[in-house]
Length: 439
Ligand code: CA
Image (cartoon, rainbow, N blue to C red; front, side, top):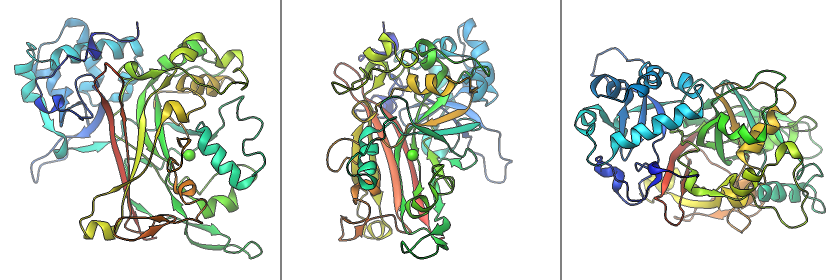
């Protein structure tokens, strides 16, 4: 049984905006996030709180715990959340996450007895400063988008774009946790760039700034060193999903990446969306793991019947761009590309966690995985400008007549994602946006 009463399509909320078609946060979603409550002018800044996104509102769980009656078994779950600490709740594990989800679903449903109490515990989302869900303990970026890996590989090795290991293990590298944030202004990074193949490098602002359209996976429950996590329980250790933009400086990357992989071309910034959507909310959008005929079967530690049957997810990701000139001319952002995770990803979230721990590497609450760029197979489905502009050779034409191969100062890049399936209410992941500033 993959879905339950919390996914019922007929379920509606007493928060009216949650029932509007196209809303990212209907009652079937219930993502958690951390925020700073609004403060009166001159008042001291309050400590972070944890809330649930519902429609265009946020249910403040500190207020909700104090002002509303809850079933007895819910109070221990609310304890860390009341303290503004999402990490301690993430560490409690999936049974606790599911129990709270069910209680929130009842409390926020139309005609709920708790509604009259909880009406006083809402903030408009627009009034809040969002924060990272928790301290990012460590960050690993994978490379599971097979169409992305193929497109990039073709630029380097036209005859054999995918390296022999690609279909046997999820490729990854260790990223930088200290520069993970929620987006906003992004200073164009400087680095070593080689302007001609036979010239010495110079230290200069990147000329090839790019984004990468990815999902972020947040570890809830860790494992001890030396104890690999079996594929059957691997997904239960993941707390949920956000968007992730792996900003990349392609000219710095192409000079530095051999032989150990990306370093300063990626570590200057990574942006995630603030609302963590649980795997339980994603249940109606599960998909089988699809592999082309003739591809190798995963080794046993990366394989299970459940993972094959429904380990992937139908999540549509989009990239939107608005340049400074478009903003000045009041031209709306333009969608540059879109792709579906189930179609783009060669490996599932469960396989990433099982593989990461397969050598005994300990993971802990607050570890973050990037999936890698999730490009679709078609033209215009590339999840980075590197792909869309074919390595900077074919500029994109934008509304208003501008052209882009890579990002210019003043460009705002926004990632969005949503899930749709027959018989299910659409849910969204929200958005993460960043604007490029001069070096
Ligand atoms: Ca990446």
